[in-house]
Length: 134
Image (cartoon, rainbow, N blue to C red; front, top):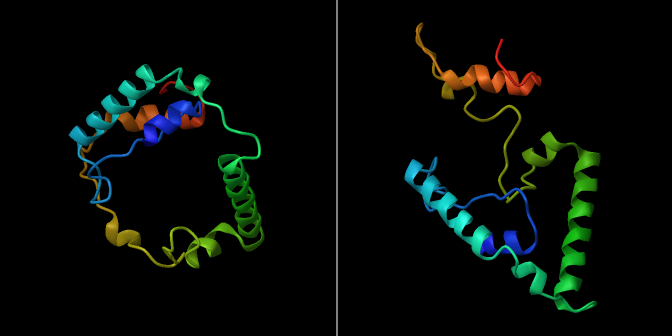
């Protein structure tokens, strides 16, 4: 349903749901399944949104405006308070994360002397806007 709503509403960037995501880092086969599912829906329902009409002033439109108004109100409160404090106070899904809390260095693993990740260079170049590694 998530993928269907995405294609109907014309989303160009789609967040994919995966069966194992709530457990821990999704397994690679779950990622492949999620991509296959999204591709199937995007290809086969791509014109469905053109056929759906929502009644002006109807329940769906009223709810959409309510959600947008509440989202704007929340963003304005966060702008006043600051994002770190909002996270600390558990404003997002009732989960609180203190700026001084978390795993910190306990969750970091030292790399071996000859550690090599071929993607780090490419990601760094992309982040710096060069598009290629030096």
